[in-house]
Structures are given as structure tokens and as C-alpha cells.
Image (cartoon, rainbow, N blue to C red; front, side, top):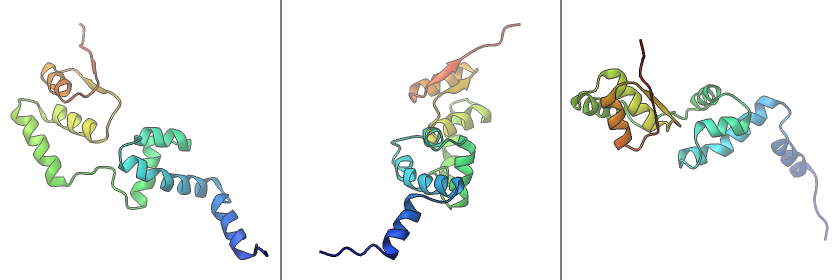
Length: 132
């Protein structure tokens, strides 16, 4: 049996071994994206695997047309309004919504009401208070 090893082999080599680091990161980011989308890994973990900063990965996906948030603007505004009705101010509301959507590893919250809501949503929080 004769095996043809011409152009196809060359193309496969180029795909498997991109010539520069940027191409490698781009290819591997594309491979990881379905896992992020299905929430099997976080953006932070994917960035760690790729050896880049999380914000650089978010920017890279943005350039490729992949949105960091999976909510529409209207859905996000509705969630924030719900938190405002619970007595939270805009800062706590946005922090909770974003930490739930990202998902964040840890939320830093100094307001008791905000901490209570975050705990009910099973968001990992870091409790602290100012001492004077």
C-alpha cells in the first residue's frame, strides 16, 4: 500500500506547530474556548494553561468576536435592578452580577447586605471590615 505524504503532511505540520508564539496561543485559545463556554474551565484557568494574563485572553476572545459575558444588556440591567430592590447599591449589585457571570473565584465585599445576598447565591466571598 502506497501512502501519499505530500502537501497534506506539510499542512498538518503547520497546523500542529505554528511558527510563532502568537499563532500557538491563538490556536490553543480556540481549542479551549468550548470548555470555557460549557463552564468546564474558567477564563482564568484557560489563561493559566496558555501562559498569558486573563485580561489578555479576554481581549483575544473579544477580537475574535467571542463575548466575555453571556447576557444581553437588558438581562444584565434586569439583574442589577433586582439587586437594587433588595437594598443593595449599584456597586454591590454590579459586583455580585459580574462575579456570578464570570464566574469569579472570590468576591471581595464589605457591605453586610451584599455579603448576605452573595452567600445565598453560593458565591465565594471574602469578608472584611475597616478598622479605624
